Amino acid sequence: MQAEHEFDVIVVGAGPIGAATARHLTALGADVLIVGPDEPARFDDHEGVWAGHYDQGRLAHVLEVPLVSSLLANRSIRRFPALHENTGIEFAKPTPSLAVMPEAITDPESAEWFDRERLVANAADLGVGVDRLDEADLRQRYRHMSFEPGHVGVLQSDAFIVNPRELVRALLGVATSGGATLVRDEITDIRREARGQLVTARSGSSWRARSVVVATGAATNAIGLIARPLAMDAFGATVVLVEAPELDVVDLPATMYLKVRDGETLYGGIIMPPLRYPDGRWYFKCAGNSVLETPLDTPDEIARWVRTGGNQKDIDEAYSVLTDLMPRQQFGAAHTRPCLVSANRTALPYIDQIDDNVFVAVEGERGVMAADEIGRLTAELVSTGRWSDSIPHDLLRAVWEIPLATEPLR
Image (tube, rainbow, N blue to C red; front, side, top):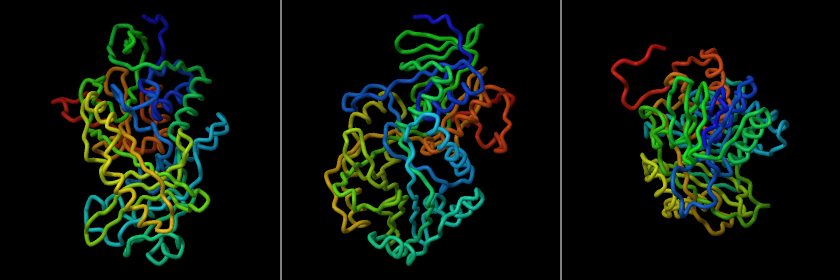
């Protein structure tokens, strides 16, 4: 099918960032088409790409490094109440966020991401109150929990757990109610023509627009819609879901836990309090050490990974960290789910114009908590053709895996 209607902007990707970009573009008066596949009903026979937002819980807080990541998240979080009011969709639940780490960290990479003083300083710069907890404070505040000796923490009491599926539903709802068109399909080609950009989908449908935004997340390099790969890496991650049989006795903040004993990292990842999943059951969610063990470069590699359902060995790791942390808590059966994550080499989003009227908006693990602000910044850039935010654009420009000999003038 060849569509005669020409849009102002086509947003490729209907995840958190694509949906947020579309909603802000419609607010600016643009005629927007959003194209992205719906979530598959199952993963054991999956073909094609996958998305990290097929989940029920992600942290939204300011306990991040660098400061720009905290700022982007904070700007998004401040708009949560208005988004909920506009849609009636409950996508964010107030939940304390706790970061726990050794008082002295010897591993340089871990020290960068679990730097307690930087976390506290970043929160202070944004006017967000946090509590610095020493080892005794942790024991006093969380008497039912058993942290590794010599560990300390930072607590943000006014953080959230965001349901990514519901966040996307809210963002798409605002976009479509504002006039955007949503098509469930997968884009396979973007081509510049005299009349603008021609975008073609797997179904054979095609559309034209003045501008295109590529917001395809961790699969961006794999699907090859842009001329050359971005400096980013995609990984097959494993989410372990452990059933919570006694909800009334669970008192667990959303926890980022770097657990180290005798110089060995036993766990480095997230532990979520019980979340209700689509099967109606409640699960603790763990995502730990294996997150960067499975690099994925092609759609076939992604599909093969998804069909595995994730690393089954991570179940033992999840049980170990949970039973050590909450020795009096009962835990039920566990299973895994596949996830797709990515990391930009700059550790910041890429928000940039990469070709004539083609833009990219890609973030890694913080894509859910910061999505609405990334979408707003992208929409402003697409609409005006210039960067006007107080965050220097050079921090968020696209970086390429293989730079051209001569980069285009900015």
